[in-house]
Image (cartoon, rainbow over all chains, first blue to last red; front, side, top):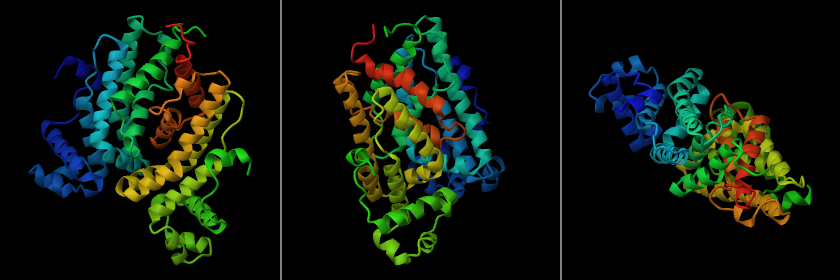
Length: 202
Length: 202
């Protein structure tokens, strides 16, 4: 794995056997959806005992969240295109692809997380913290290159790009496309980020 | 009801008795969540027979979607503040309030809609079409006043404001606030909409 991935996404918190179980879980989720997934099927497909799975992830919801987060972590290699626009487009397209594959899981995870405080902490630490670090890393590099002002890196709207694209992935009928990402980056994100650096006349 | 509400949100498609049943449903949803809601409880609270409820809404999911859409329709009075910024802030704050009250329902509706094509059509016609019309009405008024260019009114990102705010409402731990709406409108939406009218130097 390239060093850049480790730097932002962090090393895998799982043993190779655990990572294997999570990969099986994610594949079965994409095939059968959250409702259709059973811990039995995961154990059988991975040739593990149910007890092994439950020892590490005491509920189906925890297993699913871990599988989802690990799947995102693996594809979330921070882009190094050399420009802010290039980096944002690449992140956006990765989110679209991931959203297309995992829309059902994302919907189910949102419901489960709202019911279980422990899952909420897991989502925060296994997933959201890394994503925020990755985006802020890209913005900081852009500030270092003089593309935007430091002050454009805020806490309030750091997830505007992923948040809107995930919204589009989980509502029916309008999955985001490359065109969505381009319009979002070129028409709103870049003008917004450039604004505080004085590029804008008004 | 003021005429402005009728113009964009459309008149209620329900009889007054049906509207009463939907109001009871929405209140019970806000109290007990999607899982805790039963058609029995709605019928009993509204002093109706279960058959009456099922005749109009053959499944709990359809009843919930109708109640949710009707709840939004009633509060979705198109703002007439006289400025694009004022209109967007007002829409944004209404969405935040509605999102806070109905986060659990929105999550459940997204799951149910993904399972049932008929619900998807209902969401489209009872809800999304009206919301799109309301936002495009505001943008068209702003174009008439010369605040933005006609070309800023596109099909791809018309729901950037509501979409991101709904995303923030349904993820754990970061419900959108007045500050979120202001930053979104002032730092991204307005600079993005103004961009095509030549306000921006670059």
